[in-house]
Image (spheres, rainbow over the protein chains, first blue to last red):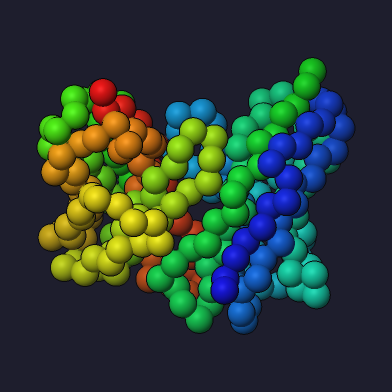
Length: 114
Length: 115
């Protein structure tokens, strides 16, 4: 079965420290990978994607993500967290063999403390 | 500007009422989706559409229905609202596939409360 796992319900970091939000997936083939952010009472905002090429992809608001094919992981990172980064983050996968669906992780709440 | 719109943003309605949540996109996307999300929690796909006159049920069973008469419009209807339908409903759209902009685009959501 296809699945996306975000093993941490919550991540706490201090402002100015680096942050990592983890994502692993179990999807056949070479899927497309995405990260989204959700602020309270809002929809999901696209942050970045991996399709092919360089394993480190850069996205909006200083976020980046590292794709690791052997570990089937796509962890979200930022070198220096801001309080305004506090939000809910979702990892998503779109199988290349079936473009009809997106598989979303369960979400990770990021808390950045001043 | 290309975008995806949901109306209303917030809706409080009595039990037994019929409601329609609107979703429109101006990006010409073939695929559209409805997700149900409880506060701070994971997304559940309840309906999707490949294109005009095509609709499919998602992974989570829902008493709602959808229609796709026009490419840009994908409304969701509840014939008789119940308190168990209280949730946030998110609409999304995407291209048919391929490497050009394969990501999904989301509307701002409709927060529905049934009293």
